[in-house]
Image 1 (cartoon, rainbow, N blue to C red):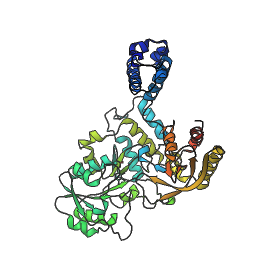
Image 2: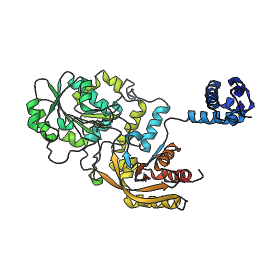
Image 3: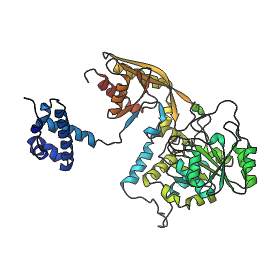
Image 4: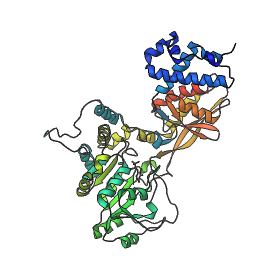
Amino acid sequence: MSASLRDIPPVHEVLASSSFVSLLEKHPRDMLVAVVRTHLQTIRTQLQQGVDATDELGMERLAERVGETIQEQLQPRLRTVINATGILLHTNLGRAPMAEEAVAAASMAAQGYLNLELDLKTGKRSHRPDAVRGWIRQLLGSESATVVNNNAAATVIVLRALACGKEVIVSRGELVEIGGSFRIPEIMALSGAILKEVGSTNITRISDYERAITSNTALLLRVHASNYRIEGHTEAPSLAELVELGKQTGIPVVDDIGSGSLIDMSAWGLKDEPLASVSLKAGADLVMFSGDKLLGGPQTGIIAGRADLISKIEHDPLMRAFRVDKMTLAALEATLRLYLDPEKALQAIPHFRMLEMPLAVVQERGYLLARYLGNMPGVQVHVVNCEAYVGGGTLPASAVPSVAISVKCDHLSEEELARRLRLHTPAIMGRIEDGAVLLDLRSVLPEQDQILADALRHIVEPSA
Ligand SMILES: *Cc1c(COP(=O)(O)O)cnc(C)c1O
């Protein structure tokens, strides 16, 4: 006979059953009560809809279901992802993976106490940014430097500390939106500075800036277009021209270079990536950039340049809200120290290793994977050429030659295959193209190849 609503046991009876002993040992009672209640409610609904849920009412079965639900609920929400998207600095995946040295420093800072705001020589209180100020000065040749939570915060605090209630001149070609809700005009409004747009989308000349200057002008701001390019008939003044105008009028020039490489990236085809040191040499009064884009460190915003301006910024009340935490600061210091020897930085920072890997090596990894996955019935695996991207606000047109494995399954749609890969532990993110899932190997850490292969085998096996 099939079960009826009267056969649904009360929650306390379920928890008193011998099948729940081990669950009660492992999990708090309140948690179990809530999950059991939900399960019983589901069964009630099924019965009301005329579904035969007799099997679901056994205590063993209930314990099994409740155990599974709790397992799933207790999974961390943040999980490791194998990045097979081909985008090396993927904002949704945490941008730059950090060098081991930076990971160790963050871990050191997390585990115990450290001299975050203490001068060990004098025993007196110090300032948090002191830990990185010297390294940045040394690497960039700047007079001073400071650090905040990210480059968006750097923009806000620079504008607020140096131009609140005053005008900031920006070219219309540079009023960019950089992902999510970061739009220059909105940031400007938020900071209390007054935006003075000059020129047009494609053409802005130095004379446009010159004409816009009034006694209320506080800054000349240049913003790197980062994630887009205007092709064709374009014109913008050089930084040197802006600096010259700034010198004549006594107005500081601020250069937001966005991804802030410390190494000349032209060897990898990233010809337009501005260097902070070049901006400062050209005479920019301040330069700012992100720590977790091309630099390869933790999420931070670095501001470098004139000591008097940096001091003003550090005395702004917002500094307290924007300051970085101890783990971030430690990781940033360790990352910066790697750059004292650029060769070392190139070897230690994961995205540089990914960029530097010869195409033939990526290809070889692809063939190995394809061979390992070969001969599964109903599964087609191919090695295909594709293009990877640096991402992180670098030139959108600068593709890096790469190799992907393309996977198609007779018994799974490409969406279902991609979904199962995402829900795997560790999660795997690829992209869907022409009915197949493409897994770009340039952005995959080589030590993850085997994990990727095993996961794929497990997921595409028809019995799975
Ligand atoms: C990425 C970027 C920002 C924002 O930096 P976050 O560190 O992500 O806050 C600001 N300006 C430019 C030009 C950028 O490329």
